[in-house]
Length: 51
Image 1 (tube, helix red, strand yellow):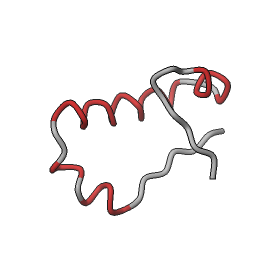
Image 2: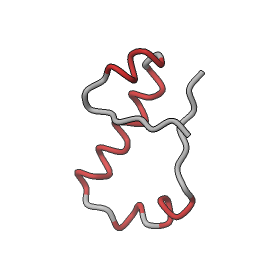
Image 3: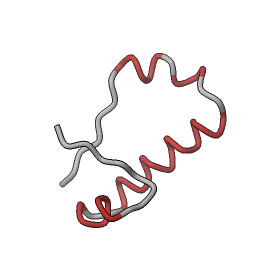
Image 4: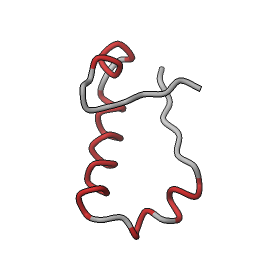
């Protein structure tokens, strides 16, 4: 199962982000929970980095 990670520093500054950016983050988190790994890689709106 894929895992999504955010740095603590990201969440510390999340509230300062513009509304559309916050909405995009929430949308990406939802899509990550719903899609398989293959679907995530194929999604044109997500850019995944494997670490």
